[in-house]
Image (cartoon, rainbow, N blue to C red; front, top):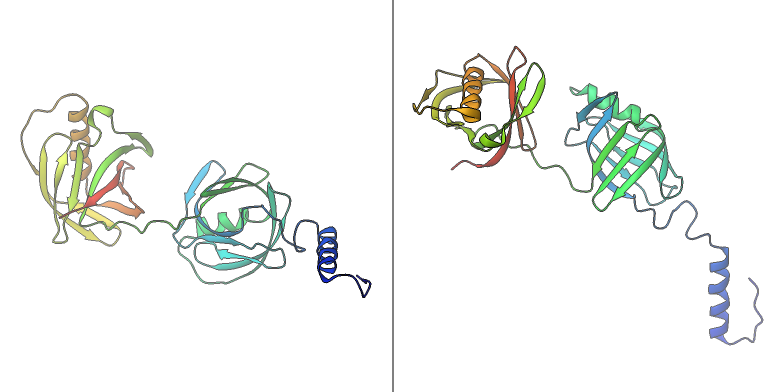
Length: 270
């Protein structure tokens, strides 16, 4: 912009500022002021085809503040880049770029996440949550906070919250909620409550399996929901090796017949 030589300096500065404002469409090219989705997001889960998959702790997506930068992230094992276009405040378009090619264990999640994270995605933004949704309704749920580390199997007090029968989970009845708690000590001794009676047993962890030896318990007569819960846990613990996995504060134990339980980490055992 050309300005007369003898204008006061303050007026020149005002004219320059006005010209810059007039030429701007709300910010530097390639940015979307107020979009609110830029930053690092930690993936919690993906839901597609009627199935929800829990994300590994390293799965994340970093959305840049400017379209001149690439989005980056991790599918759960392999890293990736992607070109991002902000389609107004309610949608983004991602075009996958490069990715690493490591051999990974959790390929089901990685494949599903990579398949969903492309094309136009609508978004729902909350203070600490961001959900991306595809045209067919599949979703990627993310949080601004990193996931909590997995609780250790041993030295943790586990409270049984649901029982699994033939692959279907059902919450513990309200009358028995919080009554079944067990702990596996580092020395292999297990103890706790089955819902009514207290028990103790030897436990052995071998890789992904957990086995309980014969249970020794008190002999109170237990009726109603507490008695039913106790009978099911006694049968489960005595059914042979159980497959275990911990995700965050959740423990899943599954028998070969599909029965099992879900428990939450209550507190570290003394």
